[in-house]
Length: 196
Picture 1: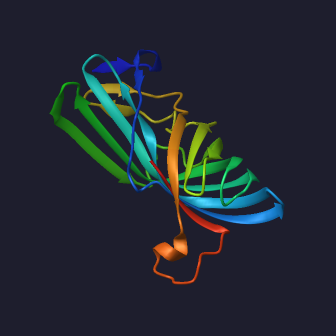
Picture 2 (picture 1 turned 45 degrees about the horizontal axis):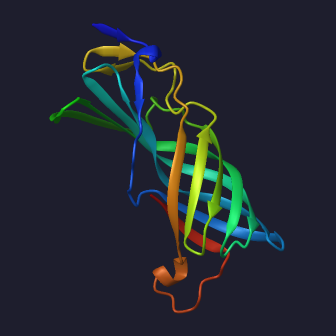
Picture 3 (picture 1 turned 30 degrees about the vertical axis):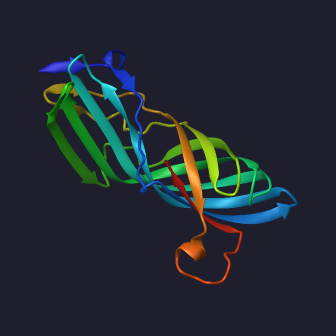
């Protein structure tokens, strides 16, 4: 049976454009052009890597982020924000396939899996361009995967000792009350965000 170490793997940029990346924020005005908010939602979090020249692995999880941020500027329009959050995973998914042979995929998934860390801290910063769009950069301080876990990918055994990530996302803000069918204008303190 083959063995694999972190030194062998090659990271691959992973793109996701699903509406499963939803963030809910409630803003509290501290001073003019300075706001504090609490954040939560559901995010699709993970990465892809090549174990060798023929085998590719995608490891991801649906997570509940619990975070807070400070916003500098007009919270309803252009602003800069910075904050931190913790990801709590609740559903882990794994996919392996032979490179160049999409028909040979093997999928697996687990609820409340021991393969991921149950608490992963992140820091982030971003810029909101206008009333609807923003860009955000996140850096994961801790590991996504549990470094004590033994993974087996089609006969290749490995422990992944480091699995922190950097992610760049583009998002749009939806008026929560209007999207829900309320006729009354939305309170500006509540936003739903969709990351792409």
